[in-house]
Image (cartoon, rainbow, N blue to C red; front, side, top):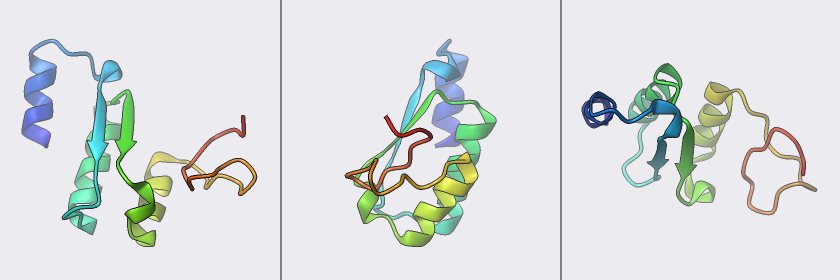
Length: 87
């Protein structure tokens, strides 16, 4: 993922306009950490997590902690996704 992201940025894409996608298939603690590091280090504009509810609870916690989010209050979330403010 790092090399393709670097090439995309080298071709003129703006990091803040990119949205990276993550899936639980084949996800390990190590590659999740690498992925999240790329998101924060490169200041990527967004992160889409496919089937968030299928991630291991430990991976969900890692994502929330790494990105600085709190779990959504039950009244604010139907899907279990993280939010900063209840809409």
